[in-house]
Image 1: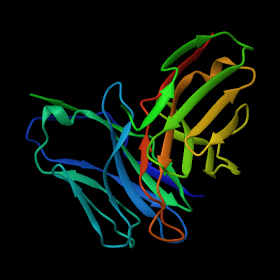
Image 2: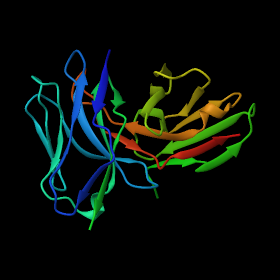
Image 3: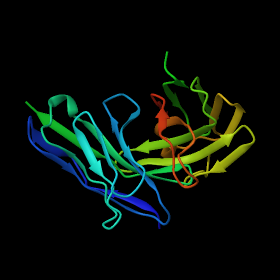
Amino acid sequence: GNSVTQMEGPVTLSEEAFLTINCTYTATGYPSLFWYVQYPGEGLQLLLKATKADDKGSNKGFEATYRKETTSFHLEKGSVQVSDSAVYFCARGLYSTLTFGKGTMLLVSP
Amino acid sequence: DADVTQTPRNRITKTGKRIMLECSQTKGHDRMYWYRQDPGLGLRLIYYSFDVKDINKGEISDGYSVSRQAQAKFSLSLESAIPNQTALYFCATSDFGSGLTNTGELFFGEGSRLTVL
């Protein structure tokens, strides 16, 4: 079936460490791919997106590349900050609806 | 003011009661969605609407109903609430995607936390 799988958390890092959160998807057609972030007590907000193969989305130091051959959209950041602590959701958009992964909590300590 | 407003933000109710969660938006988007969030399960789509006359079931519509009163308003009802409907509910809106199979960005409200005792 159509689904989004992302690595389980929590991911615990020290400030300035490198971050990778893996995400893979299954789908027919040509989905768009998204990363959303949810800070404590808030709704989800778009972090970045990519709409076709080999596109790279980037924002606030985060990056993800749409890899059609591996059906992946891994989130990376070179140097995390305490303020990046949040829950990150990978999502696949197809036929005007989004399917979300289960979310990965990131905890960054000083 | 928030572009996507949900009311109430928090609600505690009892099993069997009827509950309505309301959503209004000022973004001018045609497409509106209701999701529920449960720990460890992510977000799951309940219902969505592409315009006032269009209502579609999502993956977990059982036990829920919706009403699209206007372009800007989309409400979610639980006719007879049960404890496993305890969750955080999100309304979202979307603009049109960049192609038939693509999807535009979703804009979320701040959520409505529902507890069913």
